[in-house]
Length: 298
Ligand SMILES: Cc1cc2nc3c(=O)[nH]c(=O)nc-3n(C[C@H](O)[C@H](O)[C@H](O)COP(=O)(O)OP(=O)(O)OC[C@H]3O[C@@H](n4cnc5c(N)ncnc54)[C@H](O)[C@@H]3O)c2cc1C
Image (tube, rainbow, N blue to C red; front, side, top):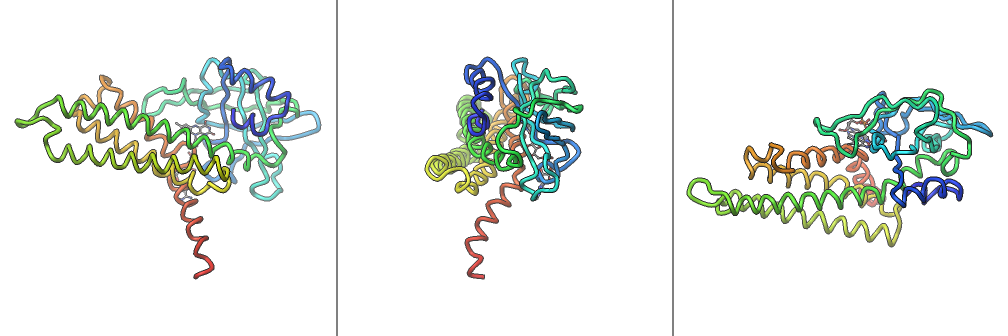
């Protein structure tokens, strides 16, 4: 939705953004490819042949979130349109309706055995031709647009992760207060109290970092806040995973069963350390920004 709002022309917005906003359809974003390390988009192999009339897409994508949702009507596909251009000006984005001939949805990928968000799809584009008016944003600017979309998207991810971790801590506290072992409530064992305190401290630190980043996005924009967006994406999923992991431990066997939502939450949060870029790539962004500040001193 953000990409259509950001880069869509009048016709594209009317056709896709309005029904998306009304909740009538949903969209999916197809960038990652099974054959190449997609955290470095310079290696992407999917091709978009652009002519005056058409855009022809060929390649294979996977981890396309939302693709298996019956309401999914359109994909935004990132591919190489200008192979000889500068590395970050080689990609364009096109809107590909799911019912276009040549679109083959191969399978829905589970996460640790769970099917979440109606499934993350793998899809092959067999010379899929759409009108050239389906080009989203300027030719060669796909990578830049993808970066702009990911800024606010990462804040959303982090906000949801924090909410999930808060719920896990709440459940853990209730369990610790209501269950007894070795003559005392779990909550009265120092080790358990220590774990609960650490959850609270780490969650509050992470939340303040996210609030600061959201404020920067509003005040200075996605590009200037790039390092902070990377920082929250490197910090929050890890913190949330650790909180849920402690909640699982406090629950004992019940924590890894389906009787509580903790196991499913752990699976979903663990994927967030990879989805939308792995931790290492975000840490690299933070390190580069930090080092740049000191370059002139060295
Ligand atoms: C649940 C889920 C949902 C997703 N949804 C979408 C979606 O909707 N659309 C989409 O296009 N993609 C989606 N993805 C894909 C996701 O964005 C990619 O998996 C991610 O960017 C990593 O790419 P890759 O899997 O090719 O890993 P690779 O690029 O092969 O990286 C593998 C590992 O190498 C290491 N690594 C990589 N770069 C560096 C570095 N610079 N320094 C040190 N170590 C490094 C990291 O440990 C990394 O985890 C989703 C993934 C998951 C799990």
